[in-house]
Amino acid sequence: MAGEKGTLPSLRQYWATQANELLHCSRRWEQVVRGDFTTTPTVEWLVNGELNAAVHCVDRHLTTGRRNKAALIWQGERDHEVRVYTYQMLFSEVCRLANVMKKKGIGRGDCVAIYLPMVPELVVTMLACARIGAPHTVVFSGFSAASLQSRLEDCRARMLITADGGLRAGRSIPLKPTADSALEEFAEVGSCLVVRRTDQKVEMVPGRDSWYHSELSAADISSDCEAESMAAGDPLFFLYTSGATGLPKQVRHGTGGYLLHALSSCRQVFRLEEDDIFWSTADLGWITGHTYSVYGPLGLGGTVLLHEGVPLYPGAARFWQVVEKFRVNKLYTAPAVIRALRRAEGALPPPAALSSLRLVASVGEPVDPGSAGWFAGLAGRPVPVIDTWCQTEAGGILFAPRTPDDPASSGTVGTPLPGIDAAVVDESGHLLPTGGCGRLLIRHPWPGMALQLQEEGEIGGVVTDGGYDTGDLARRDEENRYVILGRQADLINVAGQQLGTAEIEAALLAHPSIIEAAAVGIADTERGQAVYAFVTPRHDVPGTRRLLEELRSHLADKLGPAVLPVGLQCAPSLPKTKSGKIVRRLLRKIASGEDGGFGDLSALADPSVLAVLLAEKRRGETKIHLNL
Ligand code: WT7
Image (cartoon, rainbow, N blue to C red; front, side, top):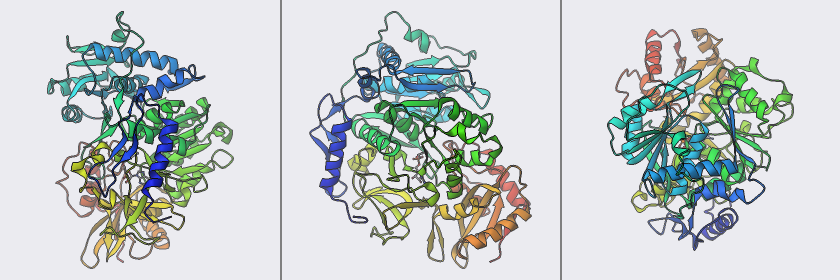
């Protein structure tokens, strides 16, 4: 059926079966999904169903043999700091916190903001919110006071949960003072709970601030708390995505549909076994953290490994030690992590230390086939390394290989997961033949779709008659496998030929000295646009003209003439969002010779990168024109 519009009844039947298998509703739904993208202006999942996400992630496992199973294993940044929560322990702590929140006047529909480092209390807080029906918004602890404040305001948060500080790459970062500045400007947050992590001295505002652990151990706080029965369409959480533009946009996720997607995609892609240790390395502040460190694996009764701070600090050896120490079985990570591990090959453990690994999956950006292939050979026997496609608005994974026989090294993210109907279309929405490069569209509603995409007002925007436009460019092969070519906004149009960024970057990354690469389009009088590329060499390779010249001949072998960059520039690092995505919009400006007007840079992990790139461009020594 590749390319044909999947039949609605069969998709609905699929999701109804999944819902029957995976969801435990306090009130059974009457219809698995109402509406589609063409006939009705709104979509609703699990019509009239009621359930609670925290019950799925905790309570349900208490009546099974999993009661004393590790739900959460936390590895602190210091090696000796390890904490384990069994499902029973998680239940008590979630209930206690839920009761504290209720005591503070928080209930159904009140938004709770979470500004915590990667500590177990972060998971507890998310689940306590879910238990009482208070939507949570997790704000990545690397965000500034201004970013936190804008999020608090945007979702009208009533409570904030933060910590004195956090540990990140050996440094103690203050969080409470940052939270204080954000709260100064936004008085609607009536209470602030503070987790003690670093023992930094902090100011506590009387009447507003209190210590998390003291509140939880108060005599009037019970370790049982009835879960709210939530409507399937009630919001479970809000997240802010910076997408391709680097500007924050609120995404709201519901309870029933989202949970169904989290559970079913987690089961389908990771095939969790009862004794698996599952490590998803993404920060809980992103969708991957929500769906694949909390709601998916805990909902399935799995064991989640949570790692504080940067997994490669103080070096790559640390990452491997964690895998070995806990005998991690399934690993979910990002291409940048895989590349960083590859570049630090000296830190590699013997294959036996990695013998527990059964599956490695990547997400977030295209993973270059070379790095994926490298990882697959590390454990002394082949480990499947797959690529998966996920998006904040999508709620979870939509594409992954059906079997590990479609490894990431073949350049594909696999096929749409069962129940997902995807297509590649041209500018005017017409289906493209196999192999054509075009817009990646999801033609039927799927349960993890953000609430905004289900609502009337949004249909006609990103959702059209043809379906939901993901904003990505893709190509599909005869076996219905998809190759992601990059973002539509980053499309490069050379003499009418539409080029995604991914394939050009993969060619650059195939050179052994290059560890990061970004391609952008710049104006070209003859061809409309031409390719300009930025490359980061390995730390032990100097970024010289000689390297660039070598790269030029490397590229001439790999790419056709139209795709060959007209300019190449070394970049000690690339401008990335805090979630690690390259912001090509800024690189486009630099490549085109602009040196200002960069707009809002608050989403950038390190804005100082721009000045370095501008200086390098001006100096011209580590830049060449290819004069084609
Ligand atoms: C965008 C969504 C951090 C994980 C989730 C990111 C890109 C995602 C892949 C992949 C190529 C990918 C897409 C997508 N993306 N996975 N396997 N290959 N590109 O969520 O921040 O909302 O970003 O990430 O462009 O639209 P997000």
